[in-house]
View 1: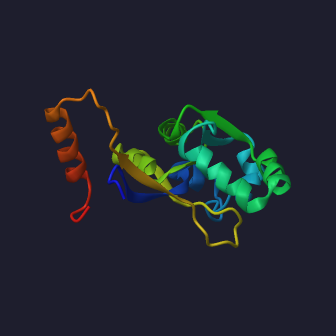
View 2 (view 1 turned 180 degrees about the vertical axis):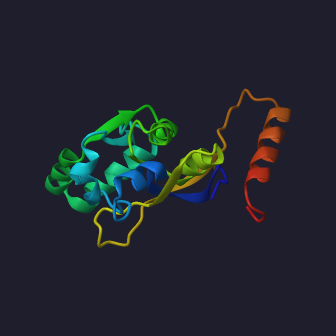
Length: 169
């Protein structure tokens, strides 16, 4: 109501894979869910994931915990051979270079990797293979009230926000 923050677009959480590795290993299909990541074929290299203490990975795991309950969530995560990276971009890079064959990331990080010409593909992730629910993280932009900011800075900030937001705010 005070026009200090705005929701933008939704970014789905996805499973990203190295297309060359997937063909080489002759998997029948890419994994679709967290549950699928328990497959022993992923144990050798592990499954890339950004540090779950931060960002969208934290939101993803919190939503998974809420949906599954503590016991099932703990059992599921204990069965997945995670390899932790500094962030989603690092996960995508690790998948692209073959350090890991599979990773969890956001859709925009997949697109950035594909724009680099990396052999990547992905799809929205689910908790269980039979479920259709997909976790999407909203993007936001916020105005921070800084009384010390001069009037020109405030105008520039508002102009930037107006540029980013779709017409009609």
